[in-house]
Length: 81
View 1 (tube, rainbow, N blue to C red):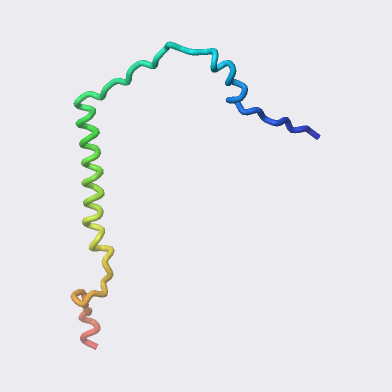
View 2: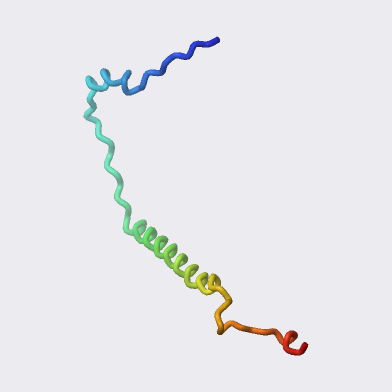
C-alpha cells in the first residue's frame, strides 16, 4: 500500500525566507465614503430598525394567549341550543 508522508507546516518551511525578505510597498489608502453613501447607509439602517420595531409592535398582540377574561366570546349558535 501507500505510505503516508508526514506533512510539514507551511510556516515552518517559509520562516527562514520570510525573515530575509522585507517590502517597502504599502497598500493604497482606503477610499472614504461620500456623503450620499453615508446617508444611504443610514437610511437603510433606519428602515431595517423601523421594520423590526413594526414587526414587534404588530406581532406581540398576536402572540398573546386568548385565555384572558376580556376575550370570552360565545357564538350565537351555542346560545340558542
